Structure formats: C-alpha cells, structure tokens
Length: 153
Image (cartoon, rainbow, N blue to C red; front, side, top):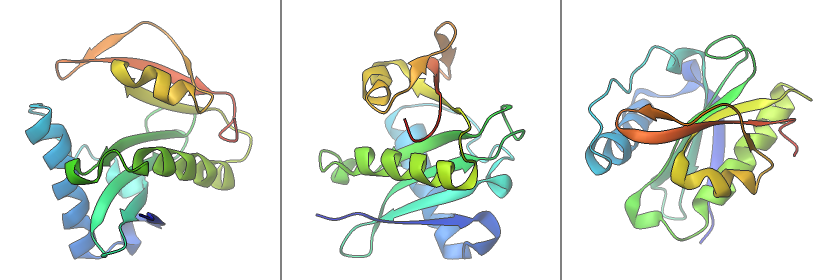
C-alpha cells in the first residue's frame, strides 16, 4: 500500500486539510497517548506540513518541519503521527525519510533536530540521528533530543 506525501506551507493548506491534520494529531497524541497538552502550539503557521495520503485518499500520516529559528537554531521535524489503522505498513519510515529529504531540499547541509519519544530512539537512529543531551519528560512520556549532522544522513 503506497503512501503519497505532499509538503505544503500552512497558508497553502485548506481549512479541511488543517482540520484533518489536527484531528489525526489529537487522535494519536491526546487520545491514544493520554497527553493533555496544547497541540496548537503557535508553530504550525511557520511550519511546512507533510500530509500522507493512502490509496483511498485518507489522511493516514502527518509531520511538520520547522524552519531554523522557530523552535531551535536548526531545522526540526516533529508532530510525526500515523493513524492507528495504518501502522505496520511502513508509513512512518516512508514519512520520516521524505521529511528528511524535504528538509535537505529547503535547508541544505544543515543539521536537523527531533525530540523523539525514547522508545523510538533506535528507529530514528536508523536515519542517522544521534542522541543529544539527557532524556527528558514531555507530557508524561520520556523523550530524547536527537540530531542528524545533515538531513541526507
């Protein structure tokens, strides 16, 4: 099953697309992971949004790329989520690979930052990310900061 990912600035997203993105993120991060937090954190408007569509036209995966200076000094990738019913199909791996390629296209030869849930550290390490700093708690879930020396790693 193929995943088609489009990358768009916030202003280019339709109201329906924004709604679907927020709904998917809230389903994964708030409902499934039981994290009561403000998902609409004021950074989406500066972000490049990756929307992953399945062959039936359903939004099943999302990610966002933040430009340097918006959250960190370097570009960062975050809010990576795959719908529960679409997990195990390789969509997460596809989405992260495409997010790195898009980050490299927009910000060539720049290190990329992610704040990964600690249990996914090895997954992100497979893309060339290495732990940076000490583990930390974010909304009751252990996380680790990770950096890739360039998004083509």
